[in-house]
Amino acid sequence: MESEGDGALRSRCPASPKTPASSDAARGNGGCGPGETWTDNTDNHVTANGKTDVERVISKKLQLKRKAEFLKGDLMRQLDGQVNDFMDSLIEESASLEPAHVAAVLSPSMSDKEKSKLRHLQPPHGQGKVFVSRRSLLDDLFEVNHFRTIYHMFIALLIIFILSTFVVDFIDEGRLVLDFDLLVFAFGQFPLVVCTWMCMFLSVLLIPYTLFHLWSHTLSVSCSHPKVCNLLFGSAFVIYLTLGLGFLPPYVAVTNSLPPASCFIVIMEQVRLMMKAYSFVRENVPRVLAWSKDKTSSGPVVPQVSQYLYFLFAPTLIYRDNYPRNPVIRWGYVATNLLQVLGCLFYAYYVFVRLCIPQFHSISGQLFDLKAMVLCVFNSMLPGVLVLLLGFFTLLHCWLNAFAEMLRFADRMFYKDWWNSTSFANYYRTWNVVVHDWLYYYVYRDFLWMTGKRFKPGAMLFVFTVSAVVHEYILAVGFGFFYPVLFCLFMCFGMMFNFILHDRRKGPIWNIIMWASLFLGQGVLICLYSQEWYAQRYCPLKEPTFLDLLKPRSWSCQTFDGGLMEPTH
Image 1 (cartoon, rainbow, N blue to C red):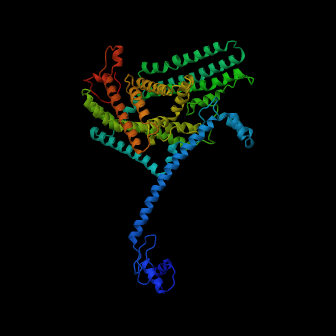
Image 2: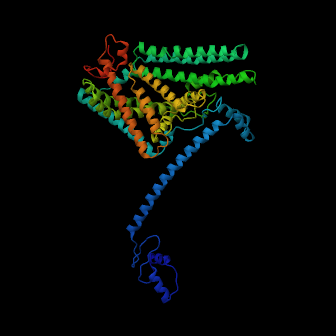
Image 3: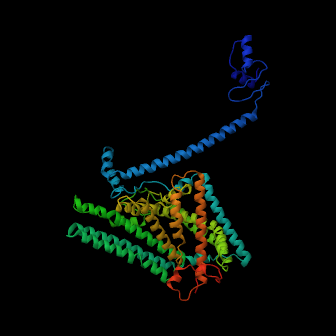
């Protein structure tokens, strides 16, 4: 009875007539004659005694496996990029379709209710942002174990920060210190913050909507001079934005000396509500003006108060009468995101306590010079990037997704894959999609419309200027001093990198350059603003002039003692 190996060998040998000529040919061509060795095209070497070269087979299989994995990864990257580009172009093309054209194309298969819903989701005028139902990118990525592990690594780092703080406190104090003094100080006077926010919100809810409703009603009924009415109500709206909503919040923050976190809440909410009020007026005024010309219906289309109220809470800065909505609220998802917000606050606390305060406490008595600045910048890179990532994850992912879920707001594209950017132009577009949309539609495009689309570089410069001024305004009021580091980085290096590292830059090296620039920029911000914070607290001026307020105190302060971030009395 023959063995299985001999049977397998014979099954691989080609059948040939048993003639001397054929035997010689078989020997000359690697055939399967008696006592000979035969090698097929798969490179499996079989010896005369029927044994297989196992190591060679395994090596070949490993090579094929590595090649297949490389091809799979490359194919998936190309496919992902093509799908993203296709979906973006599809959304942009759908935005350019007029509602009437869409209804005409889809009318045979759509009910009246579906047509009405489609019209509501279209931009009120011209081409604009179209909202579609989609998840946040990190929610999709966290379903993959590889990306979930990165999330676990950050949690492990937080645990290390907590343990190191407990150990240091126990060694220094002989006990565990759990007072969280930095958080208590940063969020001080919180009842005043809540009262200020309530006043801001109620004013934004009542005044812009009332002005718009009165203007549209006057224009449709009794206004004999439309230009005068437009000028009157437009001036009233601008006065409210500048003197009412624009002046009172910073006045409350400065006169009451609100601590940094509380001050940032007031000022950022002020900016958010101003942008929402402008978007509401900007999106609805063209509809009323179009009706006043055509007058195809009995009156202009005025949004309901409930629609405006929903917009004030919705995680978007672009007004629409209706948005795509999810059918149910996942309260577990809401609780998870809010708990992550709380965890990120403690994470930031430990970053400052373990990485920032000890550094600036040790250099606080040194004279500010180039050597000290260089060392400070490089030592501040790690906490700076951690603060950047925590701010992104806290605000743009957890906070916005929590409110989106509670409001059943279905379009969760608050950011894109900015971490894969190979150019700063793409980074600016994908880092904060919510703010980018507002700047693109209401600043960039309106600037091009007013200039006849002839000054695109000027429009881009104007967008950078507006963004830099608003960011610097938030930091100046929040910290309580004027030190335009972020403004200079925005207008100088930000503009330069926007043109040098443009969209034609591809490849991993450009992504590395972008991340290195982010590391360096965050180090500069943390270093200079922290130095100025300590200098302002420990080198106060008795009777400062206006020029003294503009001059950085850290440039001349030599005697401040350092210490924890605590208010001076």
